[in-house]
Every structure is written in structure tokens, then in C-alpha cells.
Length: 437
Image (cartoon, rainbow, N blue to C red; front, side, top):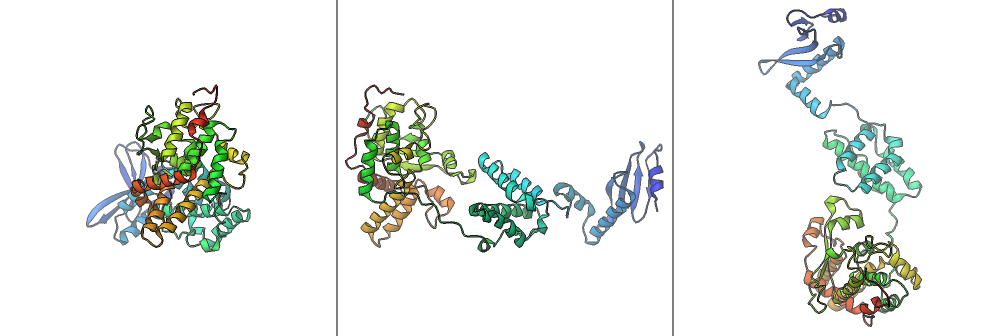
């Protein structure tokens, strides 16, 4: 058997040679003096050779350990060379990694499909709330009670929704680790019942009767505010979309209108919110994004024709007062409502509740128990870019442009109800000395 002294003393000779240790292990010395540990064995009746490392990086004792590990693999009926190759590709089995190391690997893998703001939110939340307590621990050492203790610290500062999101992110880290072959129990599963319940969803103040809406529309039409802001408020009410979508509406998003001919047929007018703008508004990841087609009523087309006289040179339908290259401010319509006395009664986002409540109530009165009532409820959800109950995300993508004829009918009915007696949009933009943008 070899000794450490003999290994150190072995030098180069004219030809390569070897110094035998025991049980198939030997030290190979090249003609230039390079030393490497090798293990000779038989597998499937053939002689094989496995290199275990170089000396002095791998000592004699370590080489013997590696040989013994290889012999154990042989006893299991496997070729040690394959095990070594697998270790090089996926890492040594049993090599412990900290939760933070694995979490950062998982996070890095998602960057290509996440928006930067979302990616930053994810890693920041882990750095703030998870890594200080669990980051240095092995994944196998984190169990449900330990994770719950950390999440409850987050809950105790009032961040109940954040605790739930953190639980989901920890669960995703474990799914990633298990996909890599870790075979770990996921401590973030089946713990919802031990977390504080989510607070009720935020409800936006909204007018829920046609009479109150007609009064609001009249007040906004006559308000002493920019005609661009007033017409933006009108289009928001007519389409019942999210305020951010209306703010970022661009002329290129609209089809089916002959701008040069006011008398041309616009019955097919359509505003399509691109997938990227949907993501921007809802903070969606790329794999959940979808475009959203919105049929435009006659009154919406009239409002757009009127505002185009003011803003047609801007890419935005409703640009800000300071620059035609930026949309109106996030609070422009909300401030307009507040100045007219609707603070706490109706907000820009409230049009979605107004539309859904009034149109669903009207459908129920007209259709009763008719199966068409279910169809109209689904269509109303589609018009609001909601996912109807029972419809999968893939079905939503497939059906987002479906039922367009009925969607147009409902959009026009809504417009006729809330625009009764409204000031023509041309009067809103007709101010002396106003210059076209």
C-alpha cells in the first residue's frame, strides 16, 4: 500500500508509470510528472478505468474514499463512471445548498418571463422577510412550523397579503428544487388555514343607478376643466375599462373608424388593448398576458372624433397638458370627480362596478331564468377583461374576441342609458382660441 511520503516523492521518469495502492486504486505519474488517481475495475465483464482526481488536490486518503464510493456503486449494479458524469452535470448528490442559494437560482430562472418591476418585488420581499431567518438554512431543515413563524412576523406588522405572497414564493422555490431532484417536503403547502385570512377585497365607490350616473355625466360635461380630461372621463364611462387603459389609449389601438369622413359607418369600431398594456395595467407576467378587444358604441366614436381635433398629432388619445408625448396624469379624472362633489361617491375605477351591477340587474329582469342570462353574465365579465367563473385562462384567450355581436349590443345599450341628454362632444371642445395639438 502507498504512503503519503511515497506519493510526494514520486517524480517524473522517461515514461509514464504507476504506483499501486490497493483494491484497484493506483497513482499514475505522467512523463512530465503530473500525478492522478485512477481506479481500475470490471463492469459487465469488461475492464474499466475511472479517474478520481489529481494529486495534491486529492490526497491519498481522499482517493481511497472515492474508490470506496465507486465500489459501493458497483455493488448496486451501476457503473461508477456514469455516476461521476451525472455529478458533473447536476452537482454532487447530497451537497447541501442554503435556501437563499436555491431561491436566487429559481429567481434568476424567471427573469426572462417576468417584468423587471415584478422580478425586483419578488427578490426584495425575500431579502427583507425570508432570507434573514431562513436564508442560511438547508431546505431540508425548514419545516411548516418554522416557515409559519417567519410568515407570522410579517402578518403581525399588518402585511397579510405580503405573507401570502411570500408563502407562494417559498413554495415555488421548493418546486424548483424538487424538479432538480431534491425530493424535499414542501413546507409551504397546506398551510393556508394557519395563516390570517385575507382582508375583504377593496371596493371602489361607485354610482349604481342610472339616474345618479346621468347627473354625474351632466356635471362633468359642464365642469370648468380641460376638454381632454372631460372627454377622457366620458370614454372611461362608456367603455367601463380600467382607468390606466384609457390613459394609455393610443390612436393606433383603434380600428374601424374613418377619421376623414364623419358620416362614414363606424359600426365595427374596435379598441384593442395590446397584451403589453394589459400587463402594464395588471402587473401580469408574460405568460398570462392577452390582448383585450373593446367594441366602441356610437357615443364613444363621437367622443373620439371630437378629441382627435385636439390631440390627433399625439400618439395618445388623451395626452397631458404639458406634453403630447405623455398621457394625462393618473389622477386627472379622479380630481375632476372630486372637484364636482363626488369624492367618496364615485371614482374612475367605479365605472366597472356601475356597468357590471346595472347590466347584470337589467339582464336578470329581462331574461329571468332563461339560459341566456348565464350567457349575458359571462359576456359582461368578458367585456370587463375578467375571467368568467368556470372558464380557464386558455379558454379566456380563445374566447376573448368571441360573442362580439352581443358585446356590441350591450355596449350600445349601456351608452344609450348613460348618455341620455348629454352635451354633444363638439360643444365640449369648442372653446374660443383653443389650438389643435
